[in-house]
Length: 341
Image (cartoon, rainbow, N blue to C red):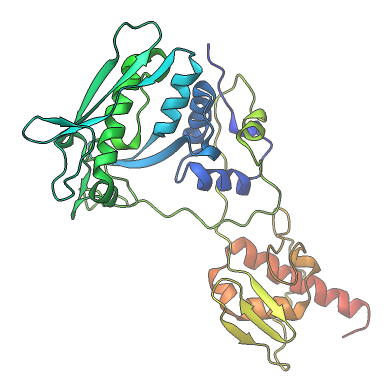
């Protein structure tokens, strides 16, 4: 029986899990991410090498986004090669409405009607040839063909034929595995096309992440943390961080937009709240600027005041705001205790 991955025991923070999702499993739930890792293990493919992807696509029949695991054509070839019986392919060919097959398609104004290619396997006497029809695989959106099929349609159709042939030649390894080029035209990516039902919720963009602790650098490190025999469990999603501010002398500017904000010498920090309760969780750490690596509690009050009174506060999460205010309170009380105020 296949071992089941459990996210809770990966030893990662919420922010690190969200970062992994952003890298190669955008918009995925924790259960979908666990299933995706399970598929990576089974196929021995590496998402960091762009061999396998997880994509959320809108399903009109279900009225929601559905996670789909997709393998690149390079991943198909790698799986076939690992069997030890892959012996290459026949010369790829295309044909038009006249049914004449050619080795090179030289009519940019008119796409081919079909493409075909054969796969040689050691134990087979003849190559397994499969044909892909333009009418069956060309992907279209609201404005006609998608950009990839409009500019690289000849190669896209050939990849569909190659995937069909590889799957036919190696069914045990590639059963149920598809490339993005083979998906039906109506299964448009959720982030590109709106659902047919206007009342249905629209997909949200992935949060911008601010990770302090180091996440795994390879899939091997990532998967090695996973246990072998437990069900996936839910993990709380990480809040969206705010833009960082960087200081140079008395000038503060947004690290993302470059917007400059002068600090007035007379501008006092926000008044501390009496007997302020410490916020839940650990104190956030700055990831950019002169105070990179420092926690909010170790940040000068003047910098905290600029953040709380500037554009940073508009984009900050409630957790970041609470900790920034608490840090002002703590540093103010410390200054009073030391007689500096």
